[in-house]
Amino acid sequence: MSLIDLQLDNEEIIQKHFSDLCCDDFTYPFLSGGQSNADNALNQLNIDKYATKRNNVYPKDSRGSSYLSPYIRHGLLSLSDVWKAVEKFEYKDRTKFQDELLWQEFSRHLYAIVGKKSRKYLNYKIEKPQSNANIYKNMNCVSTIEEELEKTGYMVNQTRMWYASHNSLRVGNDWNQYEDYMFQHLLDGSRFANRLGWHWVMGSQTGKPYGFSKFQVEKRAPQLCNNCELKYDCPIQEWPQTNISKKLSNDFKVDEEKVFGPKNIRENNSTKPSFIWITGESIGDNDPAMSHYHELPVIFIFDIELLSKLQLSTKRINFLLDCLKEINNKRELQVHITNPDEYLRNKNFASTFAPVPKYKKITERNIPSVEFPALRLADPINFYPTSFSSWRKKIKLNI
Image 1 (cartoon, helix red, strand yellow):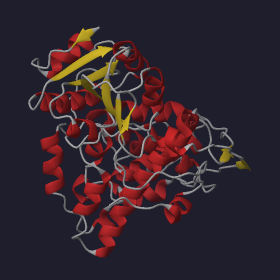
Image 2: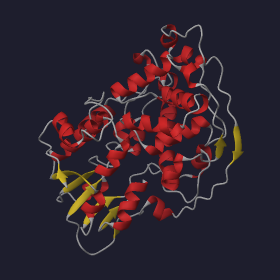
Image 3: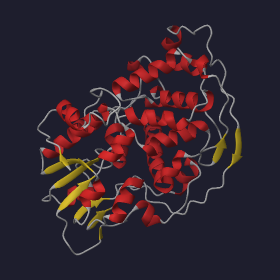
């Protein structure tokens, strides 16, 4: 077991504890973590003209991105709080922005049900294209997308769609390989949102693939085409030819409490917890367990075996360390890099339910003394949603 000294600066911590667990050299992300930075970003949020600007790519100052997603992903900002913060804006901008928040919640519901099976096609099988990957080398649009991702830890929604479409429907390699690459670097990297985005683009979720071609680049980022050596010999002039071979029959059983956790605070034994275990899904001041037990110390555990497998970017570790250091300035916190199963064994702790496979697996063996419901924009569901529209018709918003 290794305790991390949060008094060290981030670079020292990463060099000491994460040197073999990351995919890149030390790199600061374009956004700093921490509750105060999240709160400032929300207070300064301006979605004026979001409906018309949200799909812009380059130049960067033309974008309509809010850049709140890393804070939302790690629970520093709840989807409900962000929803309420944009109520004052014009209807067309507000509704477009809130649609994106609903999509985030939809992805969480879907991932809670599907879990690791999201590595496979969901509702439709997509035939892998037969392609010569060499003809797509030196495309300025693709290399620029990758360069920005690796430097900053961010991609706008349009470039995520372009990149997913190109690498799943055209190049012909395993799409999971490229999804893993995005997940490694994205500050808001989450299996729920990232993988659902890939499934939507491929057509695996809807049956309608999203085709990426030169047309979109010329419309949203013309400078990428103008500065490309393949401008007059572009290999993506046309949409990719995609074959959806068959509709899949899924039999996902939805045990609501097992999938989505408790609806109310659940006391599993009469012993008072001695600490709060927080996860990367919920490291904000509004984490229900931390809000309830002001006096208890807090534990965060970097899962050393999982990190060794994932090989995340140092940008992501930097962001998490910023968040943890701010908690440490407010209350007692210990950060460990070890096996969470072993650390939590035979201990009495409180936690906030996280609808992800790793949390469920750990708490099956190490039952929390007290478990709190996750914060949600929409109440849990009791069915497998085959589409965003079908899900949206049936949900009840929790705002």
